[in-house]
Every structure is written in structure tokens, then in C-alpha cells.
Image (tube, rainbow, N blue to C red; front, top):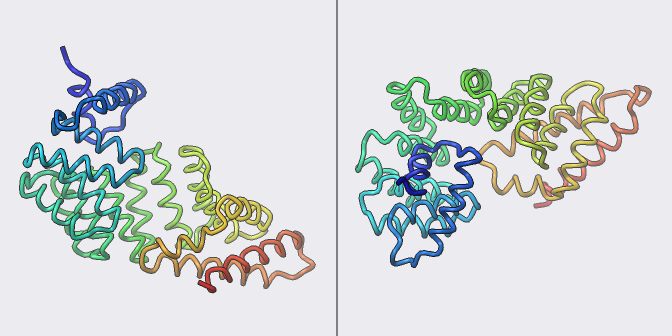
Length: 304
């Protein structure tokens, strides 16, 4: 009889999205593992716990679980890869590099570890190295969608927006239900001066992934770059800042090199465009409200 861990572990190792039935089995398995004494847990059980902690955004507990998995089985390359991924997220780059390279030492053809290495290289601004790593993957697996999307991310960070959009186009052709991809392409369209295309993608992302203050802010950004959309821009920006008043200040601390500067430049472009509209043009009330809101938020950033 197949056990729950034999059903779930292969799906996790293949990084497949769990359907509703598998999700229930996964939660049942986690509860069972938590009842097992720590000293009696297998490497696979610790791995499942690490995966569960990642899903809960508890990176510290995830690292602890993957470490125990590695202690139980020093040749468990997937545990090294996952711990390296968490270390990358935590910006502990030296530890991340050690884990990912060790995973590849154990299995040089382990594509998930190679992909995570490209993610790490991207985080370290080593864009040329990241592109080489991704090309190695795509040479053997031309339809590796994660790698194609990561190339789009790197192109975007380099300001190569047309190339970024083209890369995301290829992925979206095969992944039409991933809202994050539409959001990423929309960002590139914003900075490629295509607010109409960006708005369409942001709205698609919102339908697929739901609404939050980031998607609401992005809608405000797209509307703000369009003519005669001051009302919609104000409503979305106001809602976003009401939900997260320190949105810009927080992003200033977390954004990668150049990303925050280009956003501020776009917001200043919106302000300049608004101020250049004659007072006798329709929509004066919302223009003035939007000017006041963005001016205050930009001043908060400059005061940091």
C-alpha cells in the first residue's frame, strides 16, 4: 500500500503544484510528521516539513528542517537545493552558494539546483553569469519555462524592456493562468512606455491572483501614465496607500539596484504630466488630489 509520503514527496521534488486532493494529503502528512519524535524523523520527513515551513513563509524554521534532512542524509541534493533557495531569499548569499554548488556536485544534471543558482546570481547582480547558467539549462531543455521567465526578469533589470517582454510572451503562451507572469510583463511594459498594455496585463494578473495593495498600486501606476485617467489613478493609489501607508519607503529598502530609482522617475513623470494640464480641462478635482497624494508620498521617501 502506498503511503502518504510516497504520494506527496515525488510531487514536491518535481516542484509540481498540488491539486486540491494532493493539498489535503500534504496537510495530513505534515500533521502526522509533526507527531513523530524529532530524533525518529527520516530525511524525507524533515524535507516535507521544510517545504511546509516555506509555504508558511517561515524561512528560519525551513532552514532548520532542511538542515535536519541533510544531517539524516548528507547526499540528499534536493534538501541542499531548497535550503540554498531559502538562504537566497534571506540574502545569505555565501551559504546559498555553498548549498547550491554542493547540490550540483552531488548531481551535475540537477536542473532545479542550476536554476536556483541563476536566481542567486541574479540577486547578486551577476547578470552575465546568470544568463550563462540559464542558457546551459535551455540548451538541454528549450521549454524550461522558469529559465525563460528568469531571462525576462534579468532583461527587465538591465533596462532591456523589449527583450524582457518578448521573453515573458514566450512563457505566457504556455502558462496562461500564472498571474505573476502577467504582472512581470506589465512592469516591463510600464517602463517601455506602454501603459495601455501594462494595464491589460495588470488587470489579468489581478483576476488570476486576486487583489492586494501591490496590484492596486500597479494599476494606479498604469492609469497615471494614461491621458484622462486621473480619477482611476487616484482611486487605485489612494486605496494602495491606505492599505500600506509606507509602501514606497518599504520598497526603497527592499528593491534591487536601480528598481526604486526607475519607479520614482515614473511617479515624477506622472506628476509633471498632471501639472502641465490646464486647469480648465475636465477632471481637475482628481488631478489635484492625485498631485497632493503623490507629492506627499514622494516627500516621505526623500525624508528618509
